[in-house]
Length: 122
Length: 386
Image 1 (tube, chains in turn blue, purple):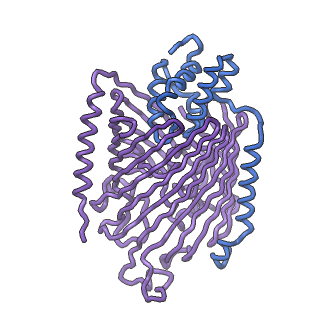
Image 2 (cartoon, rainbow over the protein chains, first blue to last red):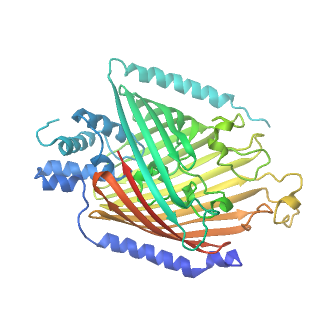
Image 3 (cartoon, chains in turn cyan, brown):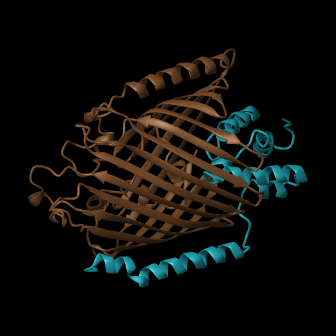
């Protein structure tokens, strides 16, 4: 227990350790490649989707994971393609979603393909 | 001077009527769509540095469940209802209508989490990678929670009221705003801090305790350049929290989110200024005496921050977090804090994605207290959504 809190505020040991660890983690994480996360774009690549769909799925990964892990999308209980339109529209209107009206159809296209396969066309 | 709530009430009523009329125009001849979603987290907190940690934390196993139903009545009107079950029992986390006139103007009325900061958007346990929340938003999972009276703004902060919000989309980003009036935090008369239990106690009813709303606003912007996106935000809330409407509070916050491919860097800072009731006998009530001017300080300042880095590698996700709380100001004679107290916490976390949308969460946290012995806390949990 520190007797003088002001000394504690300036107590450099733990602060420096924490800051150094955070910075090290940041640089390490930014610089490392490592295995690809399991997400919509990697699934699209593995399915042999065309370049345009792969880009749509990259966009979906980026936008969806802004607020929640992509898992929430992968396990969402959609019953029909139109459900995704509804879902994505609602998410677009969430503050900070970053999803523009122009991006909405591309994200829906990726999600429909992921949930219902290549046969379904929206 | 006595404040009156008549003006905001009139403005709110007008805004509501206008939005309802505009929203109703687009709601005709539409089919109602609904969506059901939920999440569960089961977490075990072990404090190996304490023989019995229950007297300073909610250790052991805790379960958090949320169930949410969203219904769209056409393109412009929607309703959301969410119930949560956690340490505090069954609570209504959401029960509101959205009346959307356009992307740039939405009116939200009911019971909801008013827009403040960035973390509350991700407050659901299935939406963030650690088992607990950053210290400025902690709701009952931090060590020494009673001594610190929890965080600055426990998340999710749920309240009754009205919010006007909207988004302006641009070529390379967006600007979000929100302004709101809600019941506000509560406490008994003659208090020295918020009483978070009162804010969710059915015995007190879910009502404003002083007939005057607390008001707040948020402004945030996001710039996107393909691989990189940067979000900056600022939030504020102010009002009075006691039944006599004498004790002021004000909360301000700033937040940053940087996304670079699969890497996330998030940081927030929150500060709360809270007026304290000095009571009839401050000499015996408070630990510290008056200042050089002979007067007792009638307020304290509590601020806090977090910075976290998150990166996914295959099915693993690594999280590094550094957060803290600080309190400046007089304390009750019975308090174990001092006039200047600090808590720093260092968290290393690893999450593993299991099949079926489940996630195994592990983390180790080192608590560095200025007023208590340092502690180690270990979390092992599983979270999932459906």
